[in-house]
Image (cartoon, rainbow, N blue to C red; front, side, top):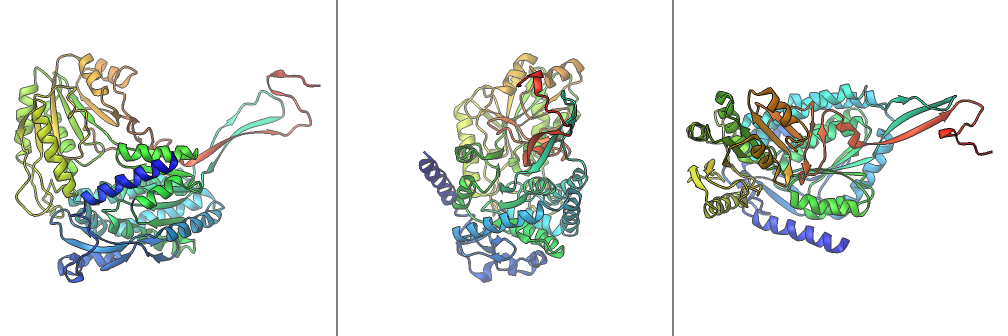
Length: 540
């Protein structure tokens, strides 16, 4: 079972790598690299070079495959990274485990001070690091900077949390006894992140895991390795300046071999995985096989539901931002727009008009609102989804074509006329396609929202307060994020982020998400000279 599952994971990643080969190729002449062009000389401010070490565990290295990172906006090579070998993975895990012995002994508020310094170091590099996210991932510049800001914000949050985490003192039924909850770190947290948020998702996990007393091992997405290296360099400088083991925040760039090793490794106490539902299921099975802990942030087929009393001046910009933002490549992107039949035509007309005004261009141009898809594979998925939608009865109202320009650009697309249960509507396609559905009743709309397999984010637009609380209640949305009069995307860091069903059930960032990174012990302390038993049992 274990061997078969491992082979399946490796084959899946091998296929994915093959399909992405035009964006992620192992060879590029040094003279053609963007990093050597004056326009991109700012990359060297992040410590990046033509060829970069892809392993950090207190020292830098990389003896595995040398891969090239490509820019989605023009498909030109940026720079190279030497990935981790399996021997280096083994060495890194050992060093991380040793580093934990030091880190766990440091009081939580002192750990918070280190996290505060990490946040400050990120602030100093926020624009240049945001530019790298834009260049390598493809999201627009303001979103790239905003993503780094999320990491900064989580650091600030974690600093305060470092003085607050803990369990209650509970009343004991036995005289002379104390009953308390003790929370301790799990140990080594393995963090596997996706291409679409190459900084923020690591930040959510890293900052909270650190103040809880854990050490981290990061495997970023294979298509955004330069961002992983740049972030790790910033964090490593803070650790080294404080004479702490660098392996507290380790990194191993790599592919399926590294991810599989982390999932199977009993020394990795918690595996936090962000990615597709398909791969997440495979990772989950491997972790569960060894009774390990897992935190899964997987897919989302998110809906906005608009009722007849909604403020359309809120609806239109919300739907456009949530469907078009990040070129439809957010976990929380709106993929289904459910409109009451009385306002359907008007809203479609207004949103289609807004789509035509979206400024498309180079993602690092501050005026651009919409950039490229991350890979050529995503472009093919976009075209396939549109063809399937047409075959299933859909009508393309806006968009539907690949753009004639360098890079992986496609037109943001609106499709109407599909049934709520059409197969393509129930498929999460990670591209900017919005399926518009027409409903009649509240009961119908709520049921359609919940009928997909994922349960990440959802939102309704209405002025009816009774409906609002029905939406928030047990018969309303079954998602982890349930909004009213705002988009499905753009979550704040103060709340717990995550979803239900095939989204995985994990929670990151705010609220009590810190509990995912700790283990709880119930402790009874007898400070009397007697030995009374619970429930009044006599054993004499």
